[in-house]
Image (tube, rainbow, N blue to C red):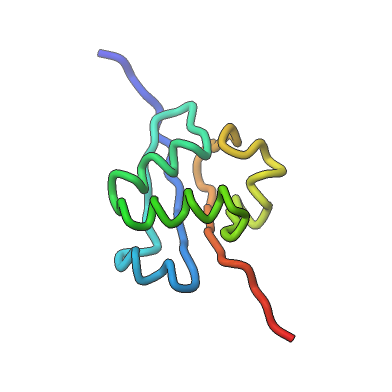
Length: 97
């Protein structure tokens, strides 16, 4: 039997995306070594509509992903390493004037 390490991540969504994840915040368990892309894969399985909105928004720059308050792009994007205990937040842009 192979012993695998579990990586637990808390996922929060804000704005209109919150309606797509009624159980948010989501606590996701991943297998180490975990990457940011693994969070997206877990969301795809749990909430396909949210996944579609997130991937489209991330690709267009409309949605910002934060890992412990830091932009995921600056941490390696899809390859950003997750060791457990992180909070991943997805935010629409904030505007006003």
